[in-house]
Image (cartoon, rainbow, N blue to C red; front, top):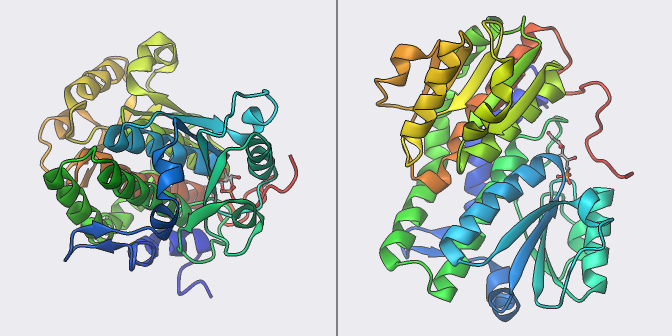
Length: 366
Ligand code: F6R
């Protein structure tokens, strides 16, 4: 049942090219340059008339929401707020019938997310679900939605559900942007083509598995890890840190790279591994200078870079080179090595990767 893999988690990491192909099947059509989500066709008016979107979720699904926010704001010019479902539901939040609430949940059973939906419904908001488990409680409580179609996720640490959620949010942003006229035909076609290429590029990233397994051995000693990224890579940093915490029991924190100097830099010494997402995009130079600041304090830098990077490879302790893609799709590639890093560090420490202590696959109590 693990398909020859030692753990469900590794199997599910390796399934991602196939899962994302399934997620996009019948929805992303490169020949006609089109993205079709039935929910956007059926509920076009509710979605386009919204004053704002409010994304509610927990854990990894909340991280996917942070990426969705950037995508929807950039492509559709609709304001998006991202809320922890557990905070939102108890805050007496401002919700009106002009709001669209997007609830993201792999299991479709998370108690806080379900309660946030009920609250938003009482205030007349339109509810859109992004879920994996077919027929679970959350899809049944929503007005419409899109399944991520990545198949059952067994490993407690979420992997393929995260990339599936980001893929659905990307398709949603593209479909809405086209309807709203906020994206040029040229840019739309470019993103659609690149999105279609992502499963193949993930296959290339997965070839780094042995290399990441090797370097993971070096870091099992660590008590703390820092993960840094900016823009679309900031939520990826949070997600990388969460994966490491969950399964390796190493304390890890994700930070927007520029915030480092406002506090966390005090932690950096020669024992501190710092994972930096430093791909070739608009933020590259800024992130490069953060890496120099870490190295000046003798921190150990593990850098996730673009394939043609000759600069960071000279200063970082370890570099992981990824294929290029457009900036808004980078999370679908940069997340993969961080999943593998967390997995291998935990395996090197002899831990039960599929059943980490104190964690359950779905959190049905608040
Ligand atoms: C992380 C993880 C959890 C879940 C969170 C939400 O690997 O699995 O943080 O993401 O409990 O679960 P769902 O998406 O089922 O609502």
